[in-house]
Length: 193
Image (cartoon, rainbow, N blue to C red; front, side):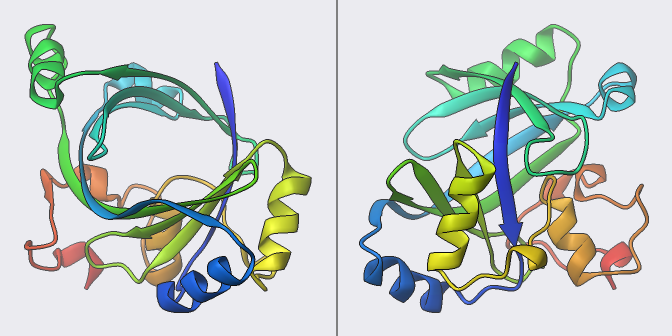
């Protein structure tokens, strides 16, 4: 499996980050776009802190096995492949008996500085955040420093670490993956109130 080296910074003003990205000569790879995904979980996957994600990224569709061995800069492991059809991929897993648990929307803008991606993310009911993904921790620290982000303020894990930061009363079992639909047009769910 590949190791993802990444960190999230929550409650970030995207307009301010864009200005900083331009000032450090980062390149905009993809403007803000809608992304759709489904999450597949089984008892065995959950026991391994893992899930399968099928995601329409706007310019490609990916299927990813994602596993969090620990909540750290390099704790995420994944296997990812590109496929050509979001709905057919969902149908394939469905026919194999792996129905999705949650359909989710988000928005993402992708920037690049040398070998590091800077991802500006928006999710329903959540303040904007960014994710830095690169080859190693030192490189991420360097980019965070250029963006005037305090490394100690960073969080590690999937999107739920951002939700838990904004909604501190959430338990480990309170997750958007438990919701059948996570769309920008959906009302705020009770467990986030």
